[in-house]
Length: 318
Image 1 (spheres, rainbow, N blue to C red):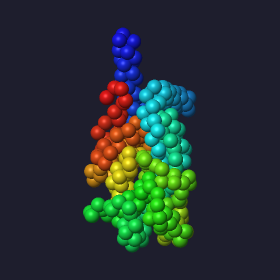
Image 2 (cartoon, rainbow, N blue to C red):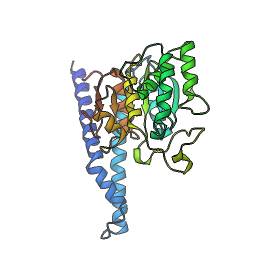
Image 3 (cartoon, rainbow, N blue to C red):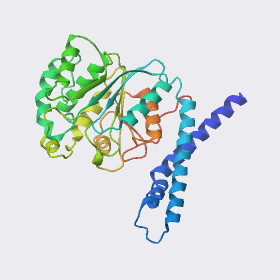
Image 4 (cartoon, rainbow, N blue to C red):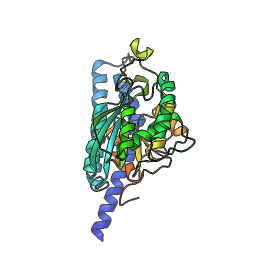
């Protein structure tokens, strides 16, 4: 009993330290790093700036080490035997998708598939195309989408069905989504309908995102070299559909500002589990922990806009 209590107290202390580190990373530490990198501090010498930067980097390294230790303690066995597919949203950094995959594997999950959504999925300029596409998709879904589902939500339900089920209808839906002339979906590793849960990974910064896949018929924004403006409705539609996966889904993204896409999804009250910040060790860990109970209800974890808690429930503690 003494040993159990000792380990439990130690684990709680780690959680507390992590929460403090996360808050510092989102506030004072971030400010400290920004100050170190800013060239506008004319009164500081080069040596001072170098020292500040080195100290900030040391703090970040220490926080990452803390999260690594926490992951090693709490992840193993949390998703044992669960089949998961990852979805890279337009502009997602491949390294972030890989990091989530590693944590899923450490948690005991089986990575059965990986897909990428192209800019046709969320570009505002492609909204009419998605409206047109929604009707034929809805007619081929094995499980009907809710009557009030938007066109973007129908596409989200179609994606989840392709990832989590098999059959002639699902093959047809997949063909529609991957149509070579205007693809919405790119299949990187075919899950063959085996996914029970889904983790969708967004770009680190909405304002600086670059489409993960260009359409075969470029939009006017893409032809001019610009970035197609993303639609929050596409994000909200996907978020609503993720809960329809057999064991739910998580939307990992950026919520650093009120107008960030993930922030807006939270503001709309979409029934989906959301996690921020993407591109961090903490974000990846929390996305995997949050997948344990990612049913179709509104849950928001992280330190960004709209988050209701820093950490998801921890197995054996919460």
